[in-house]
Image 1 (cartoon, rainbow, N blue to C red):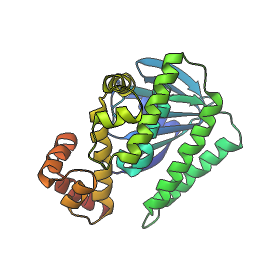
Image 2 (image 1 turned 90 degrees about the vertical axis):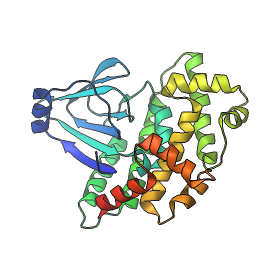
Image 3 (image 1 turned 120 degrees about the vertical axis):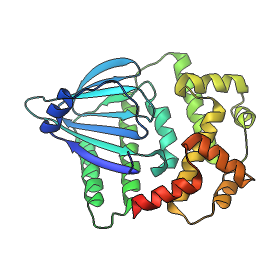
Image 4 (image 1 turned 30 degrees about the horizontal axis):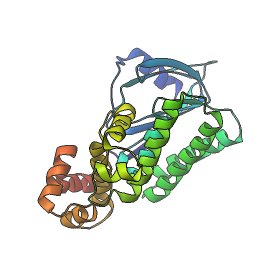
Length: 276
């Protein structure tokens, strides 16, 4: 996906097209939220398959192996699909990884709260169709939507084993600590000390939940913010690197290229062409 944000609705015609196409398990380079208003969804994720009736929400993190197959129910299907790059709402994205790991699909009651979620989707779609969309408005609406979903998820949270609960709580605390400190030139030991645990144990928890080391997650968070700053500000490459804890422009450029596949300058140029 080239855009940083996209929203659309799946219709009964789209359902027929998806069912007729080759639809093997795959990964995305973007985050995806599905909000099911009508119909049914078969979702293969975390190497398990489940089938849900609307209303539901399903979140697919970037890089997750998954497959979705929508179905009609009573001749109807209406599913909102929201796709966005990590840098679109960088302060929220990492929290989503904690909220939805091993719990990608959530059934919801068809109540007033769900109706408000539909309204938010409609408002976002309407804004994207404006002659000059205001993406700051869309960011706030998307963040509000996730806040509402998280509130509903907490009401339904099922009992888990003590170990999973403890690991999940520790991981969420790590993400909150990372959000407050990722601009600093700190490594694994800094975060482990903040959480009163060993670097080894913190790495084990991050590997279990995200299949990434603490160092990789720190670099990923810095990369997301770097992309955000490259897209939304006129700061120089050196200034952005320094703001994110890199004292040398060449080292920042090297890390960025290793993670993103292109240099910061090339990324900024691509984004300017897309926006224009």
